Amino acid sequence: ITVYNYNGAISDAAIGRVSLDSNNMDKICQWDDTVSQASRRYFEINDSTGIITMREGTPEGIYLLHFIVTERFNDASKCKISKKVKVTVKKVLKKHIDRSGSIRFLNVTGEQFLTKEKGSSTAPKERLGMSIASALNVTQDKVVIFSIQNEKYQTNHTILNVRYLVHGLLESVYLPQFLTVLTDQKHKLEQIVGFPVLQVGIDECIPNSCGDNHFCKSKLHVSSTPITIHTEGNAFTGVNVTVQKECVDRKIITCLNGGSPVDDHCSCLKGFEGPKCEKIEISFEENGYAIYPLIDPGNTTSISMELAPNSNDGLVLYIGPWIVDHNPEAPALEFLALELIAKRPVLWFGVGGNIERLRHPSAELRNSFSIEIVIFPDMVQLIVDGYKMRFSTCRDARVKHFTNSILHLGDSSITQPLGARFNWSDVAQSKGFAGTIRNLKINNRTYDLGQPILAKLVSWNAETIYSLRSPYTLMIIISFVAGLIWMMITFVVRKHRSGRKQDDSVDDIKTALAS
Image (cartoon, rainbow, N blue to C red; front, side, top):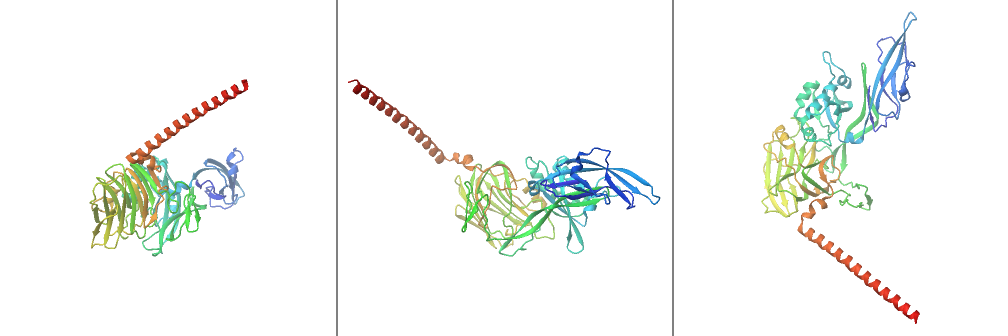
């Protein structure tokens, strides 16, 4: 029996049963009192059904439970059988769920997913874990499948939602492979696991599903009530996680990062300068990156930001598919990318195989500059420091609906493989942008750059990273230090003079008393 305990907060829950070989219902299942079992305080056994209940507050660990099953037969004889049950309890934290991956299988039940087929030495669940580990080049114990849930799909179909995490993913180089591997190996996964894959990266949003005044957001909901699946000789108790479509009013304003609403605006803590108390600045080393969910994937019309690059070339921004499988029947996947080549902005955008590139012909830019991308039905504008460059197209190549997409800032190893996967004719470079991005807005909504899903080699103290490169800033600092030294010298001199005056006064008093 395997139990995944969300935040260690599962209340008393049935997690499995003692395996009973006989169909005879006249039996009793009891603790084996001949074996000392300190773990008995965490579990209960139902005498008649053999169902094991785990009590609230059970810590993670491995527990070996010993039972005696007494069976009565028609001839009034009894048979006592010793049974052992191994229970493995593991804690799953909220941060694990927020950063987990997911796969949706078609026409398979949880029982089938946990059961070994005839002639097979492994169950589909084990084969999925091995496949993910092999693809990411990690050991199998790093891959944890912690949620298995069945749902009805359309009329006559059943879907199985599987959610997993990969330990060590955030601290290692596994991220680029993780972004593409399941998409690239979807058909291989189907062959190994044995069931059709409906979706990689579960997302309930579809284009225009929330109307013009709302945007769609797939939100994870976690229940404290676990889901238990029983099979012959095995049981799995997983975290109850559902993905639900949420239509969010574009006009609703909430204050972030500890800010407080005051009338029609937010009062923010120091360091959070956005209108809703967002962190509006982030800096990257050359191989740094940060990944965010899209605020409003439904209808993108404008993107703006301020850049302070430390190198001439690099990928600044990518919006597009991540590990979501490309369904040929779905609308064409769209993407947008912004890069710097010789410090000049280059914009990539496309739908399906139609790829367009727009290079701004600006002269060599300053140390920092502003960029705005405006998307019209038949035209795209790239504006750098107020200078507009327009690209008109008669084809429907505009980028507006980024369903099942992410916002990726900085270094990206995903554009090349995704380009091949989705038949893009060309893609932007994968070398990352080094420098600072400030005041990023999409559809005039400010991004909270301090809350990425994943990040590496980034800093939110941008002033200490790049502002010292400015000669004006350096002059100000030198002037400040010089002024400080001058103040200290003046203070010491005045104190010295004051001391001499006091000494002269004392001498005068002594002379007067003596006379």
